[in-house]
Amino acid sequence: MSRSKSSSRWIREHEDDEFVKRARAEGYRSRAAFKLLEIQDKDRLIKPNQVVVDLGAAPGGWSQLARQWIGRNGILVASDILEMDAMADVDFVCGDFTEDACLADILAVLDGREVDVVISDMAPNMSGNVNVDLPRAMDLCELALEFARQQLKPGGSFLIKVFQGEGFEAYLRECRDSFATVKTRKPKASRPRSRELYILGSGFKG
Image (cartoon, rainbow, N blue to C red):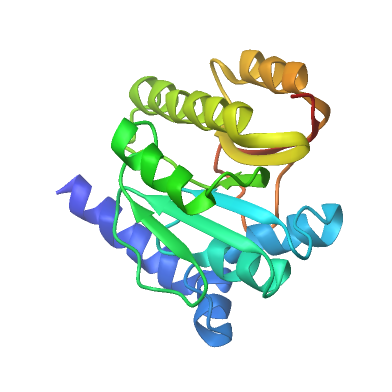
């Protein structure tokens, strides 16, 4: 019974959410678009003609924006274990990017091009148990960082959603080892009670 009450409350909050309403009105696939918009306004992360990889892309809110910003000569590869509705000029690879077959498909699309920016707003399915959810989320972050280290060109950038708690400080240190500049961002569209935070690394050391 309490679970159904909790679910009903979440649905009600979601429907009343300012950013959910704005996403629908402005044609974005998810409210997460506003998180990337704020970071882009502040940090100018994505630029014309770049090669960008969006990990955990579905339903495509971030890919929508990145595709606009890189322009017609940029390349955007999006990947997720979930299917994503087709998007013009976005190469979508369905699968787990940590598995050889999916990684091979991503690399085939890149066709030898070095990556300028890796972005990731992915998170595991949350159970509500912090002791379970945080380690799973940090595992995903580690895997995304390893992908970025393998694929980014020197000087490239990395934007990742993380969750504050056990393992966060160690992960931040890992990012600082790999990037010349590391910042944290908490966009307005991140719900205040959420542990989520974004780490932006720039100047990949290679």
